[in-house]
Length: 358
Image (cartoon, rainbow, N blue to C red; front, side, top):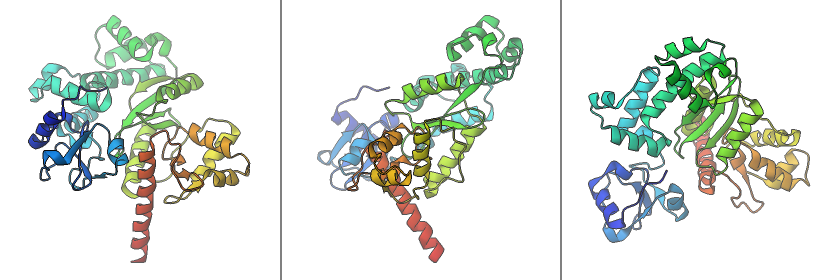
């Protein structure tokens, strides 16, 4: 979703006022310091002639600007928005609670503000997110074989026809036909590099990707066809484990333990992905070196294709593969993210070494 952008003079006014309306959606690049910031940054304001505005972190980094250490523009957006953080915490505490605009107003929240901020971050409104949480619970019960009427009453829906319509719109099939069918749990994860999406069943993780990856929709459709399972927007034990793993990775460059991965692919692709996991954090490997690792030294192009087919970002570290001259190439999440991940792992490795030798 994109918002109409005002002109630079209006954006400069928003910067002076620390207006949160475009926070995280527009960034200010300061030529005199070489850093880029959120519009709400508390730092001293630069002159109008020394700033430029960009709508993507990637553009700021590509032009050589460094992220500000005060406002930390790469940090999780929802973590910096107290309104979003509070409502998500309330939803997590009671995911089956029924929300309405009147309830938001009772909390002192303007519904249009809540809607705008959630759509900017997640592509959906808070009320829709709360409704999907309730329906996801019903879907889980139906998948376990519960009767339709029991699932309907458990989520507080008194209307049978309304419940059938809501479930059909969300899951693409009538409730009665979902009984006993497997589910795919789709969960959002905020990271310093932008939101990621995980897709998991009850046993393993099928996908972990940045949500702005161009072919994400095709990947989701492929996984749904391969598994024959119905996707719902909610967390399960696997996706909660993914959230913990990501927190550990972004804290110290190495996730805590291994994730249960459903690496469906050809035998060659699986061999390449296993070889990727063997590249130590903080180091890189060339495509030719990757081909050597799988015992197919002449299959450099095939290894590059298998590398690109990986749909478990970061955990299967395809970002650690570079060209023979060390140049960054071929990363679906964007080369700026690839550079950030490599630098993050290297810095974390140096810090661990210093701590071990001190």
